[in-house]
Length: 439
Image (cartoon, rainbow, N blue to C red; front, side, top):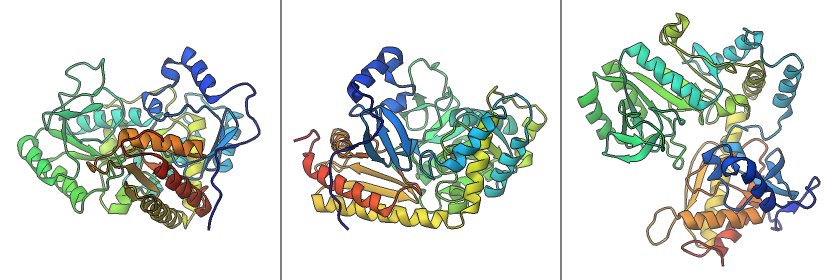
């Protein structure tokens, strides 16, 4: 199957007289840095300002159409503007989207979570992964009476004070991850390399009696897609039990994405506490954290603290109810996404081979990373990948310009879309010289 590769195609709805460059500059005048998230700024190599999105395509302010494999950083497993979700939210807005009181949607949405993720018997809703993770760690400390937390290098658990860590440190004790954090912010947080069983054993040998929790992304998704080494999650499960600590899975990315019950179902390892977001709300701002009734008991007795005016608002929970009901009804969803992911991996590898370039391609289900490597060093080529992304964007394909950020596929993507992406990628790889930049 072949397709003609052309530049991004103009579509109806372009803003006359505006370009992505001028619109982005206007944004900078009123929004600090032009974005409302520092992470989002990293996603812009060549300026792009979105007008609309549907299916697996975004349309920019100039009217150009781009196939998107970033998909809003992963929530849209059924594609952008999925009517089954957006229609339910729209209906709820007409019935009131926030009262600050219990609502029948609380039970409906929570019941779907507990049905699909068996380790979660009770939960609390929050507005974002960061909020849910902050409350989860606080709960774990309340349950165990211990303050020390073990984390892993490269795992992102939001930007709260005790979990935002730098990637370097002394090998066990990380440094604060951002300016403005108090110097002691991560004094009760340890950090070791992912998949390093020896490092885990050493931490438990030295700090086991002080550890309240171990938290990880069961599939590392923020510095490339890195699955757990065989037996590694099982090791974490056993050592936490041995030492009376809780095991926390940050399934903000993997929840309802790599399997119906998340990575814990895929790998057969059950955590004590689970954090969910992204796919759960289909792009609406919502998250949840939960576990067994025993672990959640301090919240039930109001002995642990969790709050938020907008937590569990009716609009957000209507999105959760619609999204998870659709997931529950789609018996072949995950086999189909696995097939699409395998096809995408094959086509991306073939494109790189045809262009004579090297990509680091790793995948779990419909989550994949494809980073350009420096042929001389074998390391990720940051500048080259950025140039590659810009070359693809000019031809109508968008992925993140940072090489270790994942691609996310959806049911809206077709094999024809993947073929187009692969052909665009091949041509762009031929254009971008070794060392980055465009010819």
